[in-house]
Amino acid sequence: MSASRERKERASRPAAQPVKKEKKKVSEGLILAISVILVLVAVFGTVLTIRYCQSNQTVMTIGDKELKVKEFNYFFNQTANNFGNYASYVGIDTSKPIDQQNVGSENTAMMSMLGMDIDCLEAYKQEDGSYDITWAGYFAELAKNTAAQTYAMYQAAQAEGYEASEEVATAINNEMANVSIYSQIYGMSADDFIAAQYGRGCNEENYKEHLTVSYTASEFASKYEYSAAEIDTKYDAEKADFDVAAYMLYTARAEDFEAEEETAEEGETTETTENTETTETEEKKVSEEAIAKAKEAAEKMVKEFNVDEEGVSVYADHTQATAKSYSTEEAAKWIFETAKAGDVKLFENKDTNTYYVIKVLGNDVNYQTVNALQIFIPKDAEEGTEEVDHTGHDHAADEIPEAEQIAAMTAEEKLEAVKNGLAIKVTEEKFRELAEKYSDGTHAVDLEEASYSYISGNISGKALLWAMEEHEVGDYEVFETSSGTYVVYYNGLGETYRNLSVNSKLVSEWIEKLTKEAVEKANFDLEAAMNGSVGLTFTQQNQG
Image (cartoon, rainbow, N blue to C red; front, side, top):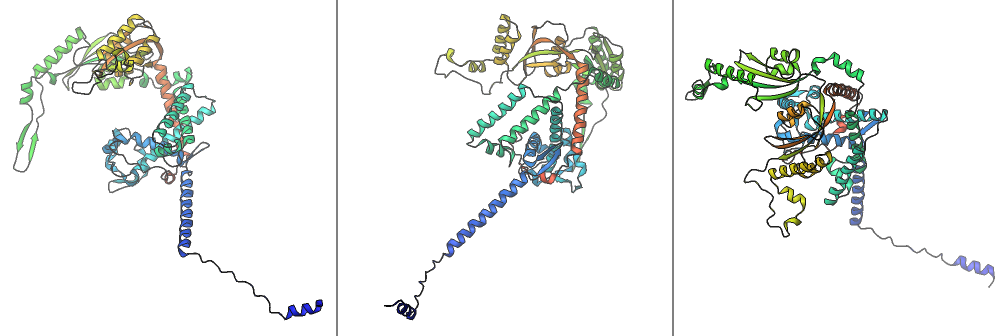
């Protein structure tokens, strides 16, 4: 067949029809499922994006530091939890989150008594007994000041090239080690554990940064020293605020010498009606006999002052204004302008029928502070309370770990062990070794540059009298108190009280100025702060 004929036949054949492919129909259920997944992904992604943006919002700016919500969380939580123990006292409903209840205006007096700053509330309106700010907002206002102060001091330290000590590094490492331990206990990562404690966005990295800034700032401030010339200038300008005295005060109030039956006769008379009960108390008049007895007791103390007598108190580092408030203006003036150490004098307040006998211990602001070490052994638990008992131990007594043996000892046995240890060798090293074993751990072993008021207030008046005497390093003494026994080791003298107190005042004023300036320039965003972990609830456990 010719080629032309083939072409004609092909042309005359019907054209081949294309094969139709059948389309598979997607089920409506699958379409719905996919749609739901896509919506969830979109929503979840949006939520994550919003949360990320919220935790990275800038709450305030301190110097060149933009403090994000996640970083502010640390300051907020620490501030709020510091006052958690007082929640019920200041009107916080412990069953509701603090971002859902406002600060009550009737609670400001108690807040002030507890050391809570209430100045920031002046910026908020009062209506129906509440301020226009939640408790979360209030704590954020306080945290703002803490954050501003911390970063301002940290930046000042950096500007001066200050490097934190090894103690700071150790403290930070210990904190991070604790995070590692507790996160493992709760089966969480370190990041998740920190976020659970402080809020969204908080993690191991920024927590360590927070610790570094806080510890460094604190140490820098504690070691900041002004020049001798600056200290002299400040002291000369404010002598009345710095000059102090130490003295013993015996107070004899005539009313305390009244016979019990006379006091009862001059007591309250009660009139009861059908619906009301009223109490009328006549002004109590003190008898001449009671006044005479009080004066006699005071005159006896002048002749032979006895520190163990009931009614005797030991005071230290009192300014003239403070001394006046404890006795009389005449007495305070005598202490600071006339008296010498050892002088004793009687003063009378006729308006209150009270006699004051004062024995001056010292009135020189330039006294040297005391370096010492201490061991504190608390009194034994009262009968009926649970005590350590090793009677059921499986192994011999000499195999019981030393820590358990010490825990089972009575206070008297511990004190005897300390005395026996010091009888062999009295050195700082030996004393520290005994403190490690027998001191209860609630009291710092080192007392560096302790003031007279610290010694009398934290140990006892007798400890102060001992500390004011001349000693050699290694001398020690035992002091019994109502809470337990102190063993104090003398370790030399420190800086003068004058220089320390003036320097402390200068540092405080510098920090206050630094903080005020930082807050004023911070552009604090309360709304951004409220995006942090602020929905705390103070439970009874928080208040324990």
